[in-house]
Length: 409
Image 1 (tube, helix red, strand yellow):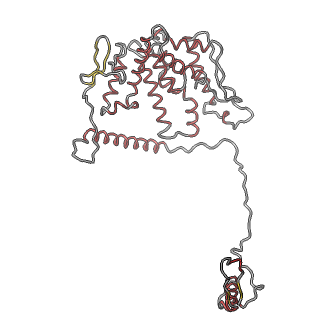
Image 2 (image 1 turned 135 degrees about the vertical axis):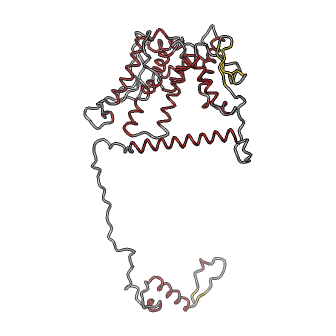
Image 3 (image 1 turned 60 degrees about the vertical axis):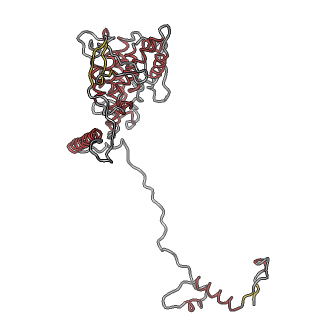
């Protein structure tokens, strides 16, 4: 009998085991540690000396080190793959037709959901007006929903437009005629022109309430607009061409042999030249970001900011709301000023009689989107992203033109 160590059993006497038990455990361990081969039993394998048995490897393939292949490619990246013209046009037209059909079906469901008798059909409250009309009342244009005049959503005052803005009145009437329910009139993205008109009316009412001092709304608008002068999108240019590195991004040229900086200088030069010759004569507007070694914009020359700020403060309520919308949309105070001056009915002396207005919503959108158009022409356009942003920019710039324009221009 073999007693077990007492340390394993501190609270009781250790049990004893027999010599036969020890021999059986040793044989079992030996059998488990030796490999078994065909034709041999566990007992025969246990009789093999332990020094003869060798460990079996999991695999016999020699280890090999990884081979790192260097990249030998040089030069600019290849052009992005472009789909066939026929496929792109047909696919886009088909997608537009599907979207139009889905919108039509959704509109029918909204209108007739309550009449189908289906309990699962969506039921929306229809609008309380049937017809939208424009009426002249007390020397102003009003938008009437049946017999109810359109009112300001906050002050509840009747929206009154000058008689010289019939285009704005018709656009406002079309906007309300497209609404399907009264609930849609509470969503700002569905009535953008109405919100812009109310913004101009708020500025005019605040100016009338503070005749002896600068109105708070006007002062806040001017302060926010002047921040864009230091980081104007027309004055932030790409680095100059690196003659020592023809493969640098700034050295890439289009089919006409022009780089991005050349296009930016052309767009800025046309707008700035027109403003400094007709609106702010005698001032010099310089680019705020043209050095490749700096990312901090520089200030304009002394006196430039004061001249521009004084001019913006003197704008009418309609022009101030229009330049605010154009500046926020294009991130450019200069482009917004040129657009407002070109189309405002109060700035008729800036455009000569018979002279064509050459700077509209399309030209302003191209001027502020020079870099985006450059990049998408090189790397491709993301569908439903870049195209939507382009149309939204033109929509906002066009609304500013409608706001400041009139029948006299």
